[in-house]
Length: 71
Image (cartoon, rainbow, N blue to C red; front, side, top):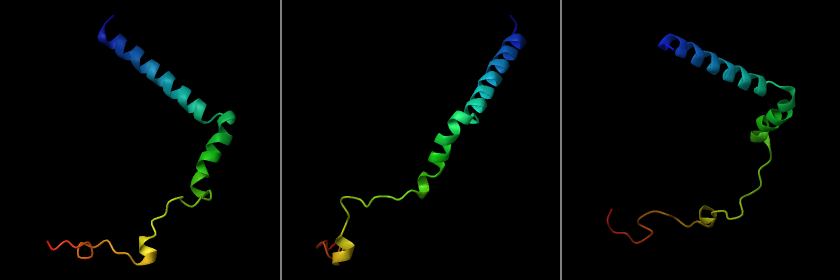
């Protein structure tokens, strides 16, 4: 088997794999799953359990407030 035949067979196998992935992605059985995944960014998010309330209470994170004199 020469190199040209090997490359031709490899190209054919890659093309078949690509067409298989395209057929899988556009099949009607997967449409509902992909539509659901596409709408995930618009879903309501729950509030995080542990919120950082330092900004609301006025606590600061600056170096001066922590007592660091190396400014």
